[in-house]
Image 1: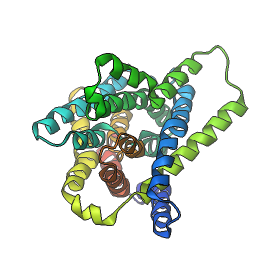
Image 2 (image 1 turned 60 degrees about the vertical axis):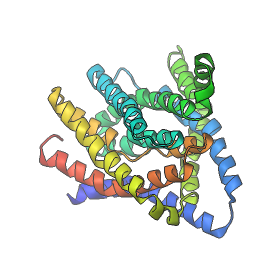
Image 3 (image 1 turned 45 degrees about the horizontal axis):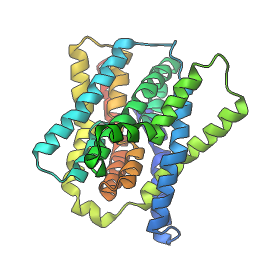
Length: 314
């Protein structure tokens, strides 16, 4: 039990420290709201796409490839995404709020949380499996995000052709497509190129977390506590639990169940805050959702890992 707790802490610790640095930066007055907004746009349009490019480019699709597992992950993410849009729309919520809550419904932090946890829990084979899942789901996350955000902001006034064009022009989609194209090349990219891309991608991840902490407002945490409680319960408990039960019913077992739980039980992806800010869809609430799920996932993921081990799954 102690080993699993230390694994979770080692994975979550750097993330929490970055959030804390952002809070301290905000309190020091170093960054203004406008600078934070500009930096978030820079991360979204330039740094994150490079991280996504390298994730897809480096994915080993020949190792531990499981088509049923991939199809299950795509199916459950699609169910969470479009099911939440239907449910939230029936609740007569404001469109921009629906778009923000939708991000929390299906978009988990695979690259920062799930990848290292899968390696720590399952070893190299777990890392390879989660790497393939990440390579498939990350572009899908961004495709769904652009569709929902565009259709719930100014995109709702655009034609289908214009909406498709906006999706194609999205930096995250371009980064993923470029990664797949480079992956299919008959030669490897020069090490200096991939090293530079890797450095900028890691910078984007770190900077996004610091900016997230800088955007956190303690006062609005109280104001939005109802949405935050529901969002945290769904993201950290209900989403992985439903996925686990469906996977068991479909006959999945062993390490594949662990991969499903770690993928669905990770906190809300930090890039969802960046995209909500770019599209002006409740960015403060998005920041609070990412921050609170990121802090509480240390406990929830520890409990999930403990449950998986108690059940003899891993």
